[in-house]
Structures are given as C-alpha cells and as structure tokens.
Image 1 (cartoon, rainbow, N blue to C red):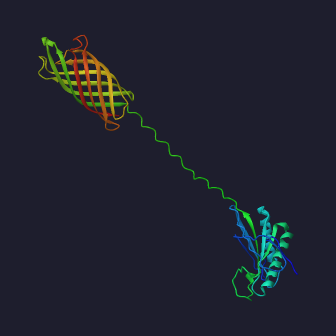
Image 2 (cartoon, rainbow, N blue to C red; image 1 turned 120 degrees about the vertical axis):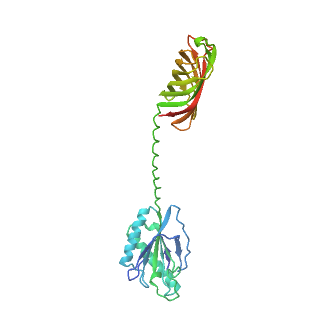
Image 3 (cartoon, one colour; image 1 turned 45 degrees about the horizontal axis):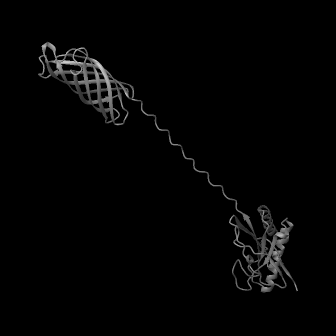
Length: 337
C-alpha cells in the first residue's frame, strides 16, 4: 500500500511551455491533511484570512503527467518563498491539481506528487517544512471546466497560498483650512460735526428801557462741534433771532456760547448732556453773560448724518434772578466729518 501525506505548501507549477501566473488574493486555504492509507478525496477546509490580512496566491503549472518543476516554475516558487518570509506568518498551503486525462485515483496521486514537489522546492529555499501543508485535489476543482479525458494545461497546477498582512494606509492628512483674513480695522472716528436748524427762546424778564415784559425769540441755530473723544464734544453755537411783538425793544439779536458735553455711546440714539457759557445781545434781551445746562438727543441715520433735538436754560448772570432767564431749544440736522 502506498501512503500519501498532505503537508503545508504554497506554489504552483508551470506547464512545459513555461506558463506561470501570480494571482493577488484567494479566498481559502486548506487545512493540513492527515496521512491516508490509500488515495482518497481530501476534505477542503476553509481558512478565512483575518480582517487585517489578505490571501496571497501563486499558480505553478506542470507538463502533462509530470510532477517535475520547470525553470519558470522554480522562479514562481522562489518569488512565493521570498514573499512568505516577509509576512511573518507560519502557515503556507500547496494544493495540487490535475486535468481529467487519466483515472480519478491516478490523478489524486499525481496531484499529491506535484504538491510535494513544490514543498521540496520551498524547503530548499528556506521555508520551514513544518510551516508547509500539502493537499491533493486530483481532478476536482478544475480551473478550466472540461469533460473527462481532456488534457487541459491550466488544470495541471499547484496553488500556493498564505496570508499576508495588510498594511493600513495612513489616514489622509486633513486639508489645511486657510485662516480667515483679519477683519478690516475700524474706520477712524469722525472728529467734527456741524448742525443747523430752527431755534426758539422765551425771555421770561425783559427790562430794557423800562420794559417789564416777556419776549419770544425766534431764529436759526448753527453749531460746530469738535470731538475730543468719541463721546466728548466741544461745541460752539451761534443763534440769530428776532423778537415777536412782546417787548418795547423788538428787533434782531444774537446768542453765542461755548459748551462741553457728554454724548452717550448707546448706538443709533444718543442722549447727551452739557454745560455752556456765553453771551446774549441785541433786541429783546438784556445784553450780558449767560450760562446754563443743556439736554438733548441725537438720532443717527448713517455714519455721517443725524438729527438732533435740544433744550437749554440761560441764566442771565448779574442781571436777573435765576428764575428770570431764557429757556430755549431747537431741532435740526447734523453732519459728521
């Protein structure tokens, strides 16, 4: 009785023409077969590669009814051996096959001899014999399906298979995101403003030339402001007015003041408060120095344009008592620059 041992192997032989091919990935390896008392159909156990491995597969082809290696077959086996040594794995499988010319029993023995020939060459090239499993498949699992009795070169082969670790590709570097450009610097603050609008004043006590009457003062108001800071305006105001039949001294007069204020930085609507001093002169008033407080509000329509409304009280210093001054006010438009 002849006995066939199926060790681990992993190369394919070439036909006489020297045909050999290398296949990138295979789906199964066969487990080591136990010794057999007679040629038999070995089982085909499957070995799934680990998630981080792929199966490396080489095919070596043989001449008809031969189990000897051609030079091209030896070259393919040498390539398989070198790749196997680089993997760090400990298992390689060589599976022999035949075509359908000949009996099934004879072809089973021939496929085992072909697998053994590949194993011997692998061992000669430095692959440990204990790492090699050989399997005979006979005329089963044909690469090219044929009828019985057909000499097909591609079916006379040995497949060499072993797992090869898959090197994880590094994650692509994140695409650099350009930093947003810095915001533009804020525009410089506007330092000047000019205002113009109607003005009204009520002189509570007019005593010139023996008159003891009140007087209504109606005219125009012109102002020029310089902003020492965005909230601290210094303002020069000039009013020209005429009295309206309320005094024995009716006619044209004027009022000139210099004031310091605080303008609240509250957005579009800006209340303000200030104090001023100056003089009044002309018809309908007692000529002299005046001083007092001023309250108002400015409403912005743009960076430059605004409207204003204001009210003030002129205390006529050294002329009348504090309750005999000139309450006054106005509204109009302004322009900053």
